[in-house]
Length: 272
Image (tube, rainbow, N blue to C red; front, side, top):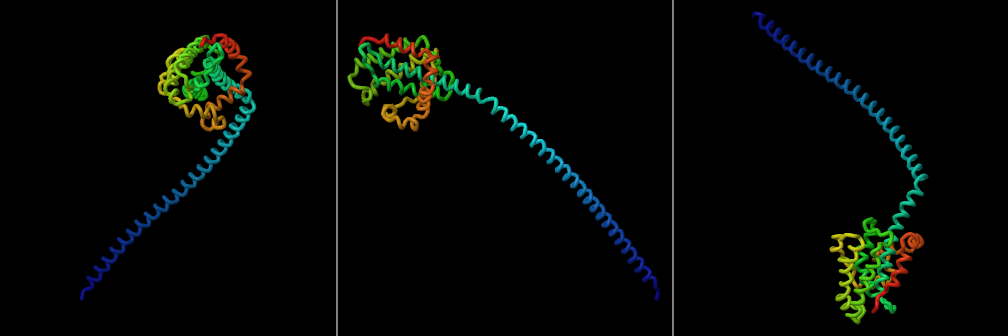
C-alpha cells in the first residue's frame, strides 16, 4: 500500500497549522495595537488630568484674587459712600415729602374755603380719594414726573377753583359727603375736577393714566380718617409718605415756599 495519502494528510495539516499561526499572529498584532492604544489613552488621560489639575489650580488662584479684589472694593465703597448714599436717599425722601406736603396744604386750603370760617372735611376726603391713587402713590413709587418740590405759581388759582366747587356743593347739598347718597352724587364733581382741570394745570400736561385711576371708595376714605392704626396695613404707601412729611418738616418749610403759600391762601378765602 502506498504511503502517498499519508504525505498528503501531513501537508494538509501543516497548511492548516500555518493558517492558524497566521491567524494567531494577526490576533496578537491586533492585541498589541489595542494595548498600544490603551497605553496611549492612559498617557493622554494622565496629560488631561494634569492639565485639568493645573487649570483648576489656576482658576482657584484667579478666583481667590478676584474675591480679594471685590472684597477690597466693597470695603472701599462702604468706607467712601455712606455720606453720598445718605445724601441721595435724603434728597429723594425730601422731594417726595415736599410733594406730599404741598398737596396736603392744597387740599387743606381748598377745604377751608369760606371767609366766615366754614370748612369741608368731607370734601377733603373726596379730594384725597382721587389724589391718593393718582398722585401720592406715584410719588411714593419714586415717579419723579410727579414731584413738585416748590409751590408753583398756579397753586392759588387751583385753590380758588377748588373753593368754588365746594361752595357749589354746599349750596346744592345739605348733607355731608360722608353719607353714601351725597358721596355718590357730589364726590365725582371734585374727583373729575382734579383729573380734568387741577392736575393738568399743576403738571402742565394731562397724564392718560389718570383716566384709569381706581378711585378710593367712601368706605376706604372713612377708614383712613377714622382708623389711623390701620393705615400702615391698608394704605402702606400713603402711610409711609405721611411719615416722610413728619420726618422732613424742617426742610419742607425751609425750601418749598409752603409757609408763604399758607399765609396767602388764608387771605383769599371766598364769600359763602
